Structures are given as structure tokens and as C-alpha cells.
Image (cartoon, rainbow, N blue to C red; front, top):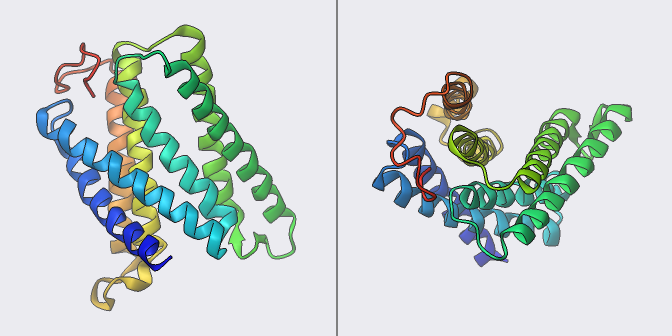
Length: 231
């Protein structure tokens, strides 16, 4: 289990670095695509290891197992969104939708349990994280249903789906490290406001790109958006 923990930590570090580089690199450019794949592999490794540790060692499994599954799901579906459809795409979409739906329903149930408890917590965890990830899971599963009904997305809708899923996966990683593991950060820089900046940067950047793509309908600066591999 020590090797799993070490792999989890290493993959998380690589995922954070690669994620921030991809976040601010020119969208769809060579650097963005290559570092994006590093991010995908690192995040999958991190989430699988983290989910295993949480389940086997009982490390807050009620929140860590669903969040680990949600992170892996977001990364995989963000990647498949900008890849050409294959024979197994529909089954992958269906499986992903069921994972997101399960996470959403489970986390919302835990959130209501936390609210109903005397201390407003469930096994020491407040209701807010459960509701946050529960709502994201349900929204993501609803998006999967839309894709399965209407077929592969094109243009702005496809880019937006890719962007928000990759960005939210990075948001989870940043939140888990900078806020959830603040105790491992050196004391001189262990300032709550300072540690919150990288997390907020991901969220603000995600909202900016969604505003540009979905509301302004501007794909300027996104290279090769018309190709299946474009991000």
C-alpha cells in the first residue's frame, strides 16, 4: 500500500503541473495536446490509486471514493469528447453516465444525511462537499444522456464539454492538494488565502472559457477546432 500511496502522490504532482500548463497553453496547439495527455494519464493514475487507498484503508471513503471515481470519469469523457467515435464509444458513454449518476445520487444522499445530523456532518465531513460533487455528477450524467441521444457534439458544444470536464478534474486535484493537504505545505507559505489562489485560478479560467465558447460563441485562439482531435 505504501507503493500505491507514493504513486498517488507522484501522479498527483505531475497531474497538477501538467494541468496548469495545459490550462494556459494555446488551446488545441501541439503543447496543449501533448501535455494534456500527460495530464490524463497522471490524473487517471492518481484517482485510481486514491480510490483504492480510500476503500482499502478507510481514508474518508464516503467522500474520497466517489470523488476519485468522478475525477477519472471527467478526464476520460473529456478526452473521448474530442476523439473520433469508435465502435465501443456508446458503451463507454453509457458506463460513464452510470458512474456519474451513481456518484451524484450517492453524494447528494450523504449531503442530506450530513444536514440531518446534529453536528451538520457525516463522519466528520460537512454537507457542502457532498452537495458540490453530487450536483456535478448529476449535471455530467445529464450531459451524457444528451450526447447519447443526439450523437457526437460539434463546434462550441464539443469544446465546452471538453473544457469544463478537464478543468473540473484539475479543480478537484488542486482543491485536494492546496486545501485538503495544506498540512504538508511549508509553514511560511501555508496561508489559507494564498493556498486558495491556485484553486480559484482554475475555477475562474474555466468560467472564462465557458463564457467565451458558450455565450460569446467565440472559438478564436482554439487551434484546429474543426478536427476530431482538437481540444
